[in-house]
Length: 142
Image (cartoon, rainbow, N blue to C red):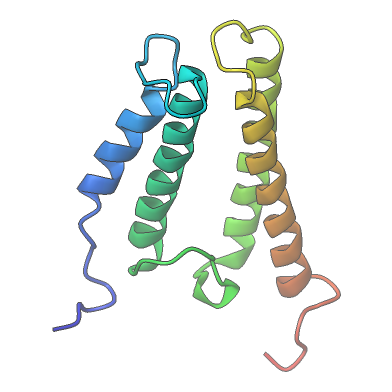
């Protein structure tokens, strides 16, 4: 039996597991050395998996089904969503700068790099969405 597209999807597991794995990357986290003999690397992989689970939960709650790529035809209010995504991308880049500079002793070395990647991907998607909905890629007929 398929779920109605507007029925909320239960994402409690993804949120709980994602938060645990993400919080485990902080200095008080625990891990094992693994074959690479580096506890920090193991915790970082866990953090990436936690980020994926949180993204998956957000996607399911936002669009009503599990997926990975936020296709533009699913956006309900593109103008507002694009501006929010731009602000979130800039905020993520600012957070990455803070983590990579004044707070670098509190986080693993690649944390700022990963956050910078996330922020730049958000800005790339926002730019593409703006071009499709407002700019030169807009379809005149729709």
